[in-house]
Length: 348
Image (tube, rainbow, N blue to C red; front, side, top):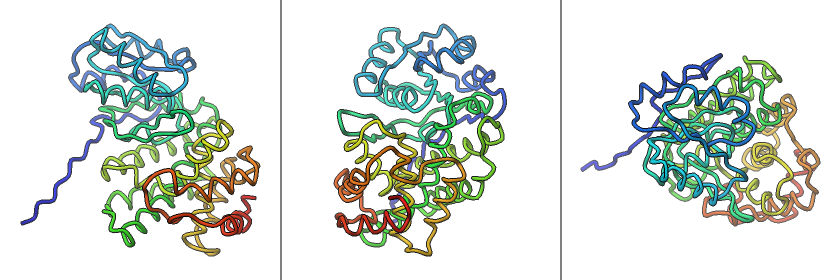
């Protein structure tokens, strides 16, 4: 008998566009949530739009998180339990949104995502990424019940955060290629729907790179739609596979070897140039990826990331040790092979 089943959790309300932040109250009201919310944010987003958010919510309380980490997740959990919060609102970039997402999962309450920067696809996904020491943990969590992404707010975010979000999406190309490879060689289950959606999103960003410019709401519209699609792909897959392959292993290893030197999205962008070359060779899509990143003013070289050649090569040759996920890196590549691909793609 056929016994296969799946359970896909997706946001009920997704509001994207000019001025939608002022519709947050309406979006939350439609969810029929009970109790008072706890707004989880960081200093800059709180100062920027925290007042506008709280004005639309019933009896809200606020917790401002510092550096991301499990201790911050516990801080949110403790505050929410003390006030008996009915739901959480993540306001800001990756740090407060991932923190709120993981805390809500532990608490068993709803979560609403209000991004103020288009820096990563975690604004929609059911995955949380939290650093601990020299490691970064990607863990399952509940996706948001609603997403409210105001393009006016996003357009005013630092340009580097937007380009990091774009690079993160573009790296879906190699993530999907790794997923397909793992399916063929290791029997890893592959979702054609999730894979196609993630790859289409990456190709859309590559094709639209020339249209994405600082301070333009139209650009924020393109980027946030892509981030939403990528997050949905992960929810459909039930894993981060559609958006995380060898290029993410490379980035996580760089976080250990050269911490704090570059944004995550920029690191995976450079990683995707090299891993695309490993997949397809000199006539593959790696050059389109590099050209798109250059058009966006995103890093394409080790020097752009602020790391040395030795740091880049060490990360590329040891990235396979980060987690048990089969990718084009297999059980590791030699330093000679790593140098060869980095030189041929112009990364070093």
